[in-house]
Amino acid sequence: MSGLIGSEGGAEGIHPPDIEARHWVHVRDATDALSLLILSDTDAAVQGVIDMSGRRAWTPKSMLEEMTLLWSRFTNALHHSHTIQSLTEDTSPAASSYRSRDLRPDLAPLHDALLKAGGDGWRPLVSMRVALMEVFAHRDEDST
Image (cartoon, rainbow, N blue to C red; front, side, top):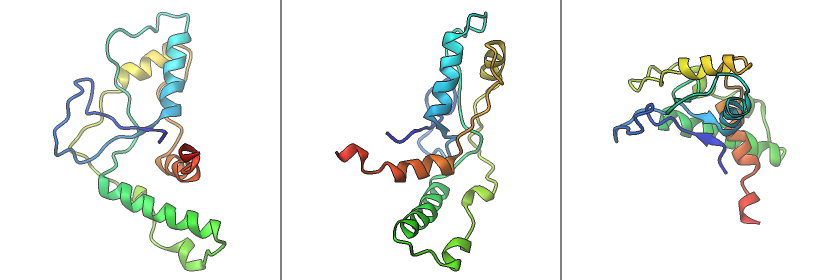
């Protein structure tokens, strides 16, 4: 299981084939929010479709760059082969801001419903970098 869920461009559920980026959200953040909404005893019940997405848009290119950087660091750690250069090389693509043409879905209804349910609103906690590191760390689990 990858642990990541990509936004599909909003509640409409249909996205153009030339989509530039996705607002990924970790499955733990999604399940925590859904659990709070489902288990709340308040009037926070949401009717219909509710949008959920991550904080930042990631292009396919930036995802591959991040994965390459993290994979290199991961394998260096496994083989005890880190160098000063390997730890100080190019920064993460997450450090650069990307202005997506694909706007993030409106998260106000989700945020408000989570507040009414007694939560802190929509505040995803698991970063893309952590999610990718988890994918690498658990890469062999499905094969056993």
